Image 1 (spheres, rainbow, N blue to C red):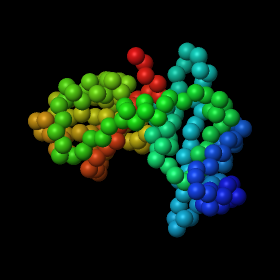
Image 2: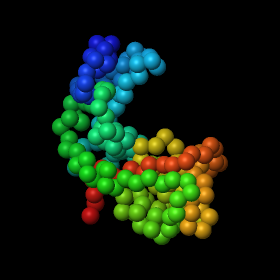
Image 3: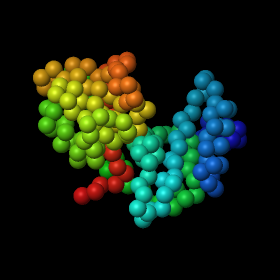
Length: 197
């Protein structure tokens, strides 16, 4: 891990490191993070395995899909760093960069938005309409309040609308539904790795 970290620091392009399985992948990720210091911070991206077979009746867990989409969205903008993946993940096909970037959009505080248009945009991106948001890829609309749990995010967001304008964007805890700190903007990634149409 130390040798990989030092090689990535001197490289002018991202390094791709393939581990033999998920256990070794996670172990390598924690070792690289141990050797990182804040002065020479280096982007380390993890592309986790689906942990299910491609044609299995079980879908990947939403947290895994969220982490994969976050990495796939960041990769085209990465000029240096380390990409960690397992041998199984290396064998899987990936969506084109245009799909992930084309289905992503940014919401900013103070910008105008129509709730009907936003709901259509979320549905097109693969988000699921629910009564209460708990997992990545879900959204809920309750009058002038829209809760969204974006893929690639650690916590969900709450949009407070005043008419057709986003008045405030707040983080909230999905367990207690209580709002915490505010932010100026959020980036929404698609909810699935592949289009379903």
